[in-house]
Image 1: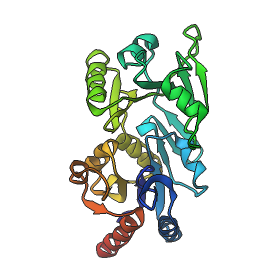
Image 2: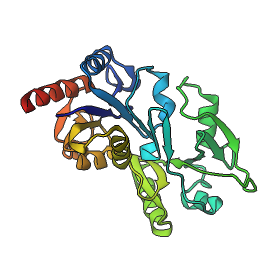
Image 3: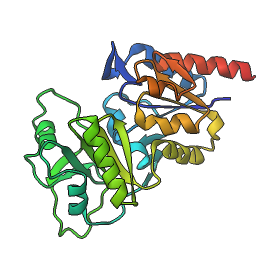
Image 4: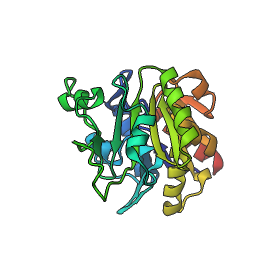
Length: 271
């Protein structure tokens, strides 16, 4: 019996008229409401910050796994997996932050972006915000290497293409075994503490909720969802995802609402 569904955001729950992060469609809203009214649990598992969903929905979530498992929120409890303390300036260079074609930001547990140069493309783009994007950080401030309480939750990095991203991923893993480098898209990386990923974050949340993995369904659409597809027997991938990603999930669906419909049928068969 499936008791809980954990949903990715961009391209999965946040999808309207083919747009990946346009909001929650009425179809998905109604399906979630029916699921929760019937006693089902629903949670979020995303590469975004844990609080990002509040921009779109005030629904009560059983758990929110943010930053690909670096933060887990269940009820009033919050668990963080911080990056190990190290020479951040060296890590900045290894991840290509000193090259202006790359877009790299270090992120604190409070969701501040720490940057070495406020003129870097990622910083300028999000501060100016010409497209009116909903921001996924609290504020941007310059990195102070003398600050004794400096802590990092993760590093977000966007590269010009997939080849550049893969080269950085291999370089970081070769020199720093304290990190896990997660591909959130073909050219976007998230660097978190070793052992952290979205699937493990969901498992931690399940432990607090008293759920077995066989009671949880996961829905996603991108590379950071692959560990979830491999960990949980009830896995759903959006039809618009890359073919190699779709192949790893048990079902392919057009929407989160369709996945919830399949889950209800599976639960009826198990009675």
